[in-house]
Length: 410
Image (cartoon, rainbow, N blue to C red; front, side, top):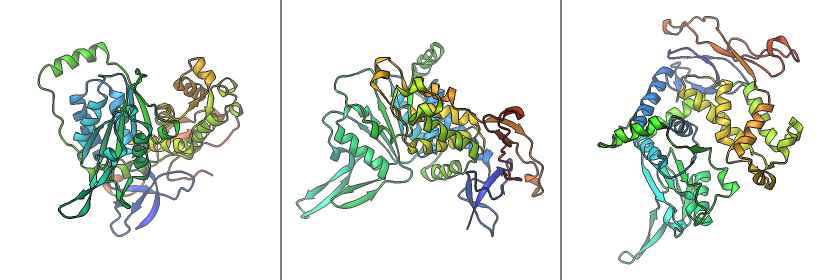
C-alpha cells in the first residue's frame, strides 16, 4: 500500500484523481495492484445515500430538531463525543437512543445520580468464594455507544472517571487494561435550568467533548406533528449501519479535502480567542479569561470534513467551517467575571470573533476533463479560494489558491 494525497473526487466513479499536495489536507490509501482505494468508499454518492437513509430513519422518530440530528451524525463521523444541553422533554435522550438503534452495535445508558460511584461506571473485581478467585465485571461504559444521561448530576469523581475513558479509550481494573470497542462514542445530556443537586462539568473536562449542542423547543407545527405521531404506536427505527460500516465511513470522512486557506482561517479564529487584542478585538479581550486549545482547532477541521461528507461533498467549503465553529467553541471558552456580570454568552463572543476574522472567499469553477475510464470522464467542479484581502483582484494582490488537483499553488 502506498500513501498518497487526494485531489478531487471523480463524480460517482470508482477512482480518485491523485496528486501530490503537501500544503493541503486529505489522503487515502491506494492499492497499486488493483487501483482501488483501501478503506475508502468506491462511490461517494452511495455513501451519502446511506447516510441519508440513516437520517430518514431517525426522523421517523424525531420530529423537527433537524440541526440536532445532523450534528449528532457529524459527531459520529468525526469520532467526537457530543454534549447535549436543553430543558427536559425536548428529545435529547430519545435522539441518542434512536441513533444507537439506527447505527447498531452495543448501547448502554447510565443515569447519573449523586450517589453514583466510579465502579458503577467502569466496573470492578468481584471475589467468587466458590472458585476462590476474582472475576472482572466490566461496567456499562464498555460499549460502542454510551448515553450519559444528566451527566451534571454525578459528583466530580464519577465525571472524571467517564471523561478519562473518553480521552484514553480504555479502563484499568485490577491492574489490567481493557480497551473500548471501536467505534466508541459518548453522548451526554445535561439540564441547564436546575441549580440544586448538580455538579457542573469543569472547563478541562468539557474540552473532551467535540460538540456542545443547544437543544431548543420545537416549533408550533412540529409540536402538533409530535402529538399526531406519538398519539399512536411510536415508530420503531430500523438498523441501517453497523459498527464496521460506521468505522469505514469515519475513514472516508477523515479523507475529505480541506484547503490550506481554510486551515489558516481556523487557526486565526482560535488565535483570536487567545489574544483578542492582536486581532483588533479590544472589546472582547475583557470577556475571555482563557481561549480555546489546539484540540478545538482539530475538532473544527474534523467536524467540517464530516459535515461536508454528510452534505454530499468530498471537499470542505467555508460555510462548513463557519457552521461548526459555534458548536465546537461554545463549551471551550472560559469567560471572565466581567462577561458573566454583563450577561455575555459564549455565542455572542464567538459571533464577534467571526465578524472580525476574515473568511476566505469561494467561487465554483469547472475543472478540465481528464482522460480515464468511461464512468470517470467528468470531473466534479472544485472550489476556488481567495484569501482575505485579495477579493476581485484588490487588497494585497495575493494569488488565488485552488484545490484543483491538476495544479498546485505556487
